[in-house]
Length: 126
Image 1 (tube, rainbow, N blue to C red):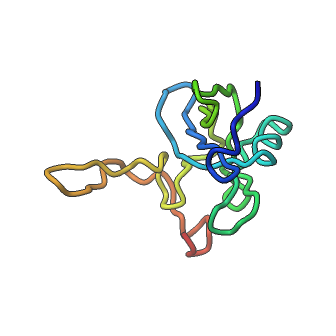
Image 2 (cartoon, rainbow, N blue to C red):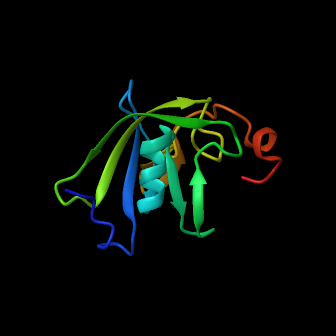
């Protein structure tokens, strides 16, 4: 049984979840090579759709994601990757999770406090 990379132009959706708290940290995409690297190295690796290349999460920030468990859905076209984050946040905007906004009365509002300064980590490019 293999993941179905053919269904979505060679990619599977990767939901990244904190293994201890259960909080969803981010969603990314993996091609076969990124998935294989993730399994081989134990660090979450993705396919960057905008840069068209492999992307080791944390290669710029040092905030790597140590893989604890990988599951797949019934259609074999998405994976749930439970991780331990090595750093104060996963989001390039300075938050623990990329899901830091909540819909409130029809408006998106920031619902979390930043956990780090992205300018200090990325040199002003977030």
